[in-house]
Length: 264
Ligand SMILES: [Zn+2]
Image 1 (cartoon, rainbow, N blue to C red):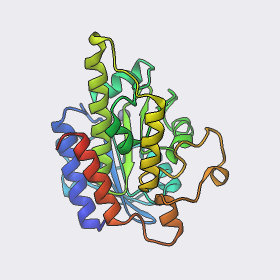
Image 2: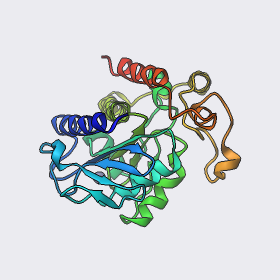
Image 3: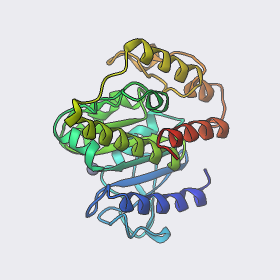
Image 4: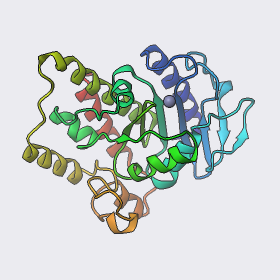
């Protein structure tokens, strides 16, 4: 992702997020890593409806401002933690889509998985990160999940999703909200039916063999990064093999898969 592309996509997906009704007031934030120590992000205290190229802010890998007239948002620390733990990730998005956020503020995990396609796209878990104070406690709460998945709901907050491109991070967020809305809609009908464990296992295996899985997906919580990292045909293995980030073909494949799951 070139810096020019990242800037265009930050504006594009900020506006899309607002149009989708996932943000009110100054909610939501987006960033893209264009070099190891260079991240472009949306400004703080700014409606996502009004983000333009000239409002974007440049920060370093610690989230400290490098350039731009405006200030970065405080949750840039969460984005920085994600970039630090995931060399394959170049974009992070955050919003408060109503249904997914409703589960989070109710302290409930979205009852995924119930759609087979979504397991291939997102894995078997959409974790609920526990409620904390903002700042350092929020980073500590998110940290155990970063290498295990590509999207989380956060209690008392909204959804964070990440990926190799802004498009894919945004699509993941969209899919999380889509699933939450379906689960919500199914409640009067008796609620969604969980997929049989054997089917989930086979879908997860398919995802893993396709190189779609997060580096430590399925690893037990609390395992150290080194101990829990299987050297497999996944994204991390590609990074470890010295390839610069994720291959465009793989990104295109995952993107197409999520679009299919969303019916596009
Ligand atoms: Zn938020």
